[in-house]
Image (tube, rainbow, N blue to C red):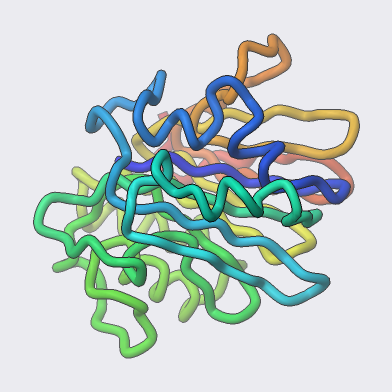
Length: 230
């Protein structure tokens, strides 16, 4: 359910991350290579990036493959930190721009790849939508990203069938979790990519084991097992 990508490093164009790679998010919207749940991601897309310290977003409920507007401006959108996603909506969830990642609290951009029972999530007035991903994002924002790993473990324990791959950025670092779905990391000379699946066949991609907390900073990439890791 969904594919997402994060970038932290030197300033690059959004197009270089989403459109230019042979299996970038634009291709993953209709032909993902490693997606275990669902065949495509046609229920919307979102691109978030930092303009200095300020997060900016562009989201749509339409399929990414048919969006000529983003394709035309993506080469001109440049940032040192990007969080982008294409969406395959959980059955029963609304298909609308507000239900599409990345979600934001004004300082962070956050995407959720997976599914979670809304019954285990507290009601929140700050959720951007009533969909499961937006409600999970609101809970994470309310509790603070410094407790991301703890929050994921608690939600995963309450809903054993949940898939809780989260990816978030604040302009200075990326945080991610693996909980039931795929994530890969690519360390390049100019920065680090975290992605649901590799966007090319570079042998430098590394798969992240399940139930890990990943942190990317200027100092490098760190991995921490989450409680109950397998």
